[in-house]
Image 1 (spheres, rainbow over the protein chains, first blue to last red):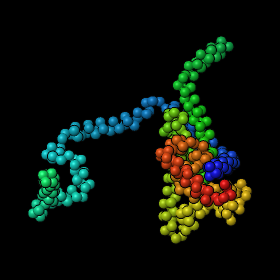
Image 2: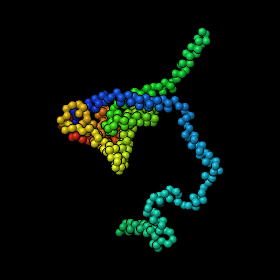
Image 3: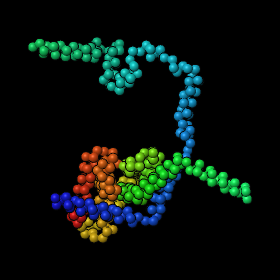
Length: 140
Length: 206
């Protein structure tokens, strides 16, 4: 209780000191703060005065660029690439593969010339082992 | 004469048309924002000045916060402006401190610019020396200087919590909203700030 009172008194004194320092700001600082406020308010007035169509200018410009790009490429952008059709893995899978260093090593092992025992075989074996082990445990 | 009368009548007839509700709302919104900014600008300056220890930087931070608030959040309800404004201000202060720190580190590699590098590295070291100790200081100016030095030494989140509650007078919920954290965190930061200040300023304050 004493501590609480002491803390309250401490807070009260610090607050009084801080508020005093706010009241005693120099005229120069006050004037510059007023100028800053007026600049912000001018911007607010200007933004509100701007017609509604101006807000759509960036979106319109972006749409025009896309439209022009489509016109110049003759609609080829929309055609599916043969590689994408042939590939089973989606681009997201590819990204994950690149991000995961282990997965990248796995694909390296699969290439011809790598060792006879690939990591894919190991993981297949490990998966089989775990399934078998769980079945075995259940059986015993 | 008749032409003049027609002109006056015409002007009187068009005056109510110009005074449309949309314009009234806009003017009211601007007035409301003006009152809000006028109410917070000095305290905001003090907060920025305590953190940055430089008048020009503090003014820049406050002006940036005002512009950001007007640009992004003027359409939000006015009761949300206060926490939003202080959140923007604190982010700006933190950016400026980070910029100073990086500049100081870069300048410290330049041998012929050691003076400027010292300025950038440690703003607390540039603060006025509180003297023989807070207990021996009796004058308000010295007390204020000691308190500002102690506040500048606090970790940013603690200082933020202390000033938002003690100078700006925000409650726990408002402080938490302005700091972008939970009410529990805001309380913890404030409590730790109080403890650190009590230790730093001594028993004279209790």
